[in-house]
Image 1 (cartoon, helix red, strand yellow):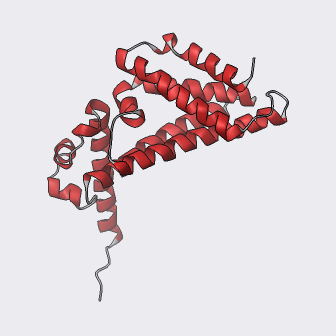
Image 2: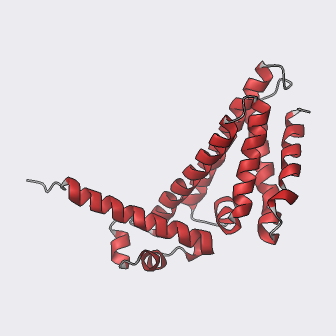
Image 3: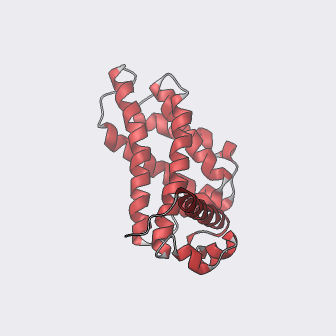
Length: 198
């Protein structure tokens, strides 16, 4: 008969996995992907390296799980910001402002999420993240077009261009430490002009 984990054992394993991900996220925010070796994550979590391998078979698998966790939080935060606005253009502006503000408040983490060289599996997840961000903008573009607030346009293509433009525009400020108030108004203005809004 195959061994079946009890709920208590499974809960301990789940807690340990979450502790590993928390340690990896802290390391990522402090020092980037290159520093997220299995041994370094284990040390940050206060466990043996072998214990990390019980949950993740490789650094790439850990990095993908980490990327999904951290990006999931970012998507949730910008979605919440966009949903507070009744007008779709205001929602797009709020989304871009929230994304950029969060990036500028955690520049090392943002560089890791947006631009730092990483494993191919992480690069694939980076595309998923960008598409999720794109889709949040595209649905609001479609609403604004339907309301007559924007000219007709291919929403997905426009949104992808905005995501790419905003990410590229943040690379310099994330490196040189410019404060959000020096960057956010210009990014929002760029976004609204790119859409054809006022």
